[in-house]
Length: 395
Ligand code: NAI
Image (cartoon, rainbow, N blue to C red):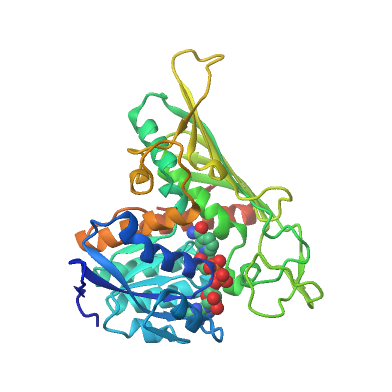
């Protein structure tokens, strides 16, 4: 049972928030809720930090002190059972998304849940079904689509000035696991992480491809494990940490994905994702080619969109368009073009859309349906690796 949002001194009603899992993403979700009134003062509700849960000793208490949660606990059930919580962030390792998501939705909580939402598409589907049954909103952490320059890219594609999209390249290359002494965290285990770079990074790439270019019909994929053994972590650490000298254990999921996608539109996409690319740090982005133009975006220069548009076909130049007010939610952060936004700002945008979707009882931003569709494409990639051929993506 959930009690309705109550009033706050700002005149906004308050929205009781719980956060389950206070690692990197738990902190990012919490900070986003805290910053909402700075950037989106007109939201109908103000987030009130009610409780945070994490089984690692001391973590939840430390976060409660840092952000002002009223309560800290080691049990996520304390949050799903709390009547004064209306919205729950699920920012745990992937294997817990389904169980916690279904329980929280069943208790009438709105969900802001991290990608990839479970280990397989069936997990995301179960969370989606529970949310639909309960009539709650379910936002998903596909934050790259929130970048104002990405919103501008979508507007340009929808406006038709570039002609018809023929092909695109989407890449998500990272070195976070490139060090052979990188800790064997939950991300490298089938049971707790599910897939490797598919769920971790390619899920974002699939979402970007779908957001910009539409549905995916079929995929053919290849994967590889380049670092088959890693040291066990000595304590609870993040996937960025080394565990030099730890007892070696097997890596159970893929480090690398190379994939071709056929879109319903007829466009072709290549998607490459790696967690072990030395010298690539957050090299996330896309190049979209169309009959009359092209678009170029790199997360590390998030506010810049390369745009080539015209009727020259050959030798047509590319301009840099800086994100500006009017592009997505840019105006909530800065008054003029070229002022840089950050990764955390993308989470503030996600939080604002989530909170607004609760108030309006209709979704804004990436939803559980997007997570299901992304996961179906990832499942098809895994099936293609097994069979060695093209696999149609279920919808
Ligand atoms: P992390 O390992 O930094 O944090 C996970 C936290 O969950 C830890 O504090 C851990 O103690 C806690 N936890 C484990 N079992 C729990 C339980 N039973 N109840 C409550 N808490 C529990 O992991 P990180 O990087 O924050 O990833 C979490 C999720 O966020 C993953 O699903 C991941 O795919 C996603 N993610 C999304 C990103 C994005 O850009 N949207 C970026 C990084 C992660």
